[in-house]
Amino acid sequence: MERLQEVGALTRVIEKRLSGALGVNTTGLSAMEHLASEGPLTAKDLADRLRVSTAASTHIVDRLENAGHVVRRPHATDRRKVLVEPVQESMARLFGHLGPLLHGVEGLVEALSPEDRAAVENFLAGVVWIYTDTADSLPQD
Amino acid sequence: MERLQEVGALTRVIEKRLSGALGVNTTGLSAMEHLASEGPLTAKDLADRLRVSTAASTHIVDRLENAGHVVRRPHATDRRKVLVEPVQESMARLFGHLGPLLHGVEGLVEALSPEDRAAVENFLAGVVWIYTDTADSLPQD
DNA sequence: GCTAAGTCACTAACTAGCTTAGCTATATTT
DNA sequence: AAATATAGCTAAGCTAGTTAGTGACTTAGC
Image (cartoon, rainbow over all chains, first blue to last red; front, side):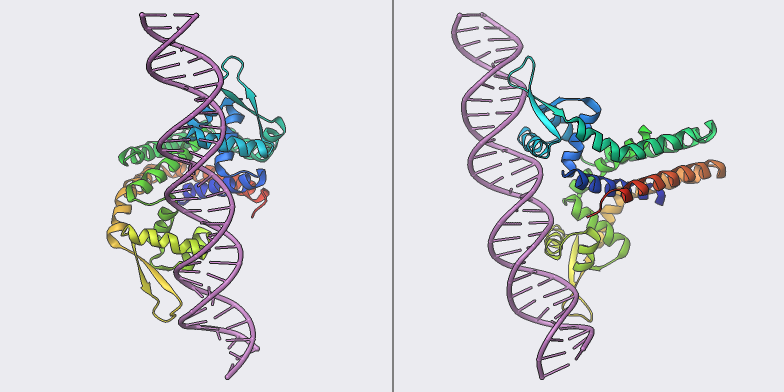
């Protein structure tokens, strides 16, 4: 179904442009999204979520800090750890860009009748099932 | 809607694993997908479609050639040009992995009643509209 | 209280994959 | 015929990841 592919392609376009607009790369954007949804995280947490090494996590946080998107804070109880705290203005900018998209999709869902909503939900559940099956059939590293 | 995000996340997982399974990176996979759908392309065509420089296109084709996925052929009429031709066995492997996914989604669509199909189509059209609007509202480089 | 083992964040050095600049060969335009 | 543009490539450089290793710190065990 071309629409699904179109949605995927648009997602990539949005990601690239949003990254550019915030002066980060796509990994940095992903980090900001994690921080937006979870609040402050340790560098190790970020490394795990982004599936990168702790060395890379350090560099990613360096770039985000230099761009003014996060600040590093000492952990309250563990002196090995550093907390990466999102800067409110940056989160506001991120949400300023993504808010209309999120609200728009919410609006679409709310406008559906219960029958239509069930149809869409079932269809997407089927797509998730097929995609999961494909992912599981591929060797994973 | 979490399902849509789940579809997006799974798409990324599949892309990574498929790349690994074929011994290429995601840019190489993308090149292979273009070659699968369009047939042989010039190195410049690939550069344009992948939005990279011609120097990068040369390297990408080098890697695909070394991995046995493509061959370079002289252009029939323009000696400056080189045609990048997909190797049938590679396309067969690519389709062998993706075929079940594509057919599975086709099957889902075919299983829908006309009413449900219209609901899904309208919903996805709405999502495309919203995503396009967001993409257009972001500065493009 | 001390020691051993493990964890965290970082640095150094390296690699992969892109870029720009520039080149040669070729095609097109004037 | 000369000037200009294009294609694909190489060389050098940059970005952003990796692994290996380090010092500071925490936890577990005695």
